[in-house]
Image (cartoon, rainbow, N blue to C red):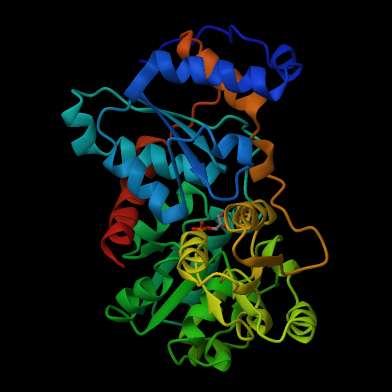
Length: 378
Ligand code: 13P
Ligand code: SF4
């Protein structure tokens, strides 16, 4: 039986008129009153003011782990995007965790419901199911492992769980592909073609063995039958609108201007940029790489602007540049601001919660199968 939730007690428009220091003080007051019952998680792409109030910051893998391992907490405020909050809900409310808490759920809130991910939106479950059905006419789908990047809706994760597949993040994509190839001779990777391609190329798979499936093509994702037959990895035609802005000419420009500069990029960048880079990795790895470098190291970093700017501030002993003359920030991550965080936390604390993310039981059950595999594979 669902319990009716009273209308929000606090008004967003009023809260939006407050200054950041007032908002931070009010958020801190909720943190103080809820104590360890509240966990604020912040993805590395969040704004500095938000990150300053997070209990934990991390990349997608680390934040999933934090949600999975939570013990005292009863509420998670996810400062990130929708698929991350869904993942936290599934992991924090998996059956053994519910049993430990005598059935009490952890409530996961996303401060602004408009914080989605354009890449995740490039693969709808109906399109994946249609692609799978079409593939079954050409290939043995029993011999294909579906791998979904964590940047996808829970329904895709459930599809993957039901079809013997795995979820990966940018920090374990290679291990996830190895896991998949230990089971089947083919992989279908969605929604990010670049992460799939960059990872598979590093494993010796050639571009000609990686046809791209276009969900809007008339048939077979726009591929010839022979191309599918010789495939090892079927890539989905999806990408990150932020990372696709980094171009090879930006790498060339920095190398020309600074002889010793190192190029450090996220694997969501296109192949032409990824292959020119000196180092690459998840947001967590990018941070660790900079932290481990000797003072005076010069970097041009190809990932979301807020993270690069924070690295600049936190590492004045290094010379850090953003790998593009154009501003590439994630507009949806940016939706989470102090006003939305304050509004959602005050309503939570007043018993009038807003923006709860709760994945339905069946989807959560199958997604969990694929997410648990993700957490096991490094
Ligand atoms: P990671 O933090 O896992 O590297 O992910 C980057 C990203 O695009 C999140 O949406
Ligand atoms: Fe999605 Fe790209 Fe934003 Fe990450 S940076 S949330 S992949 S749009």
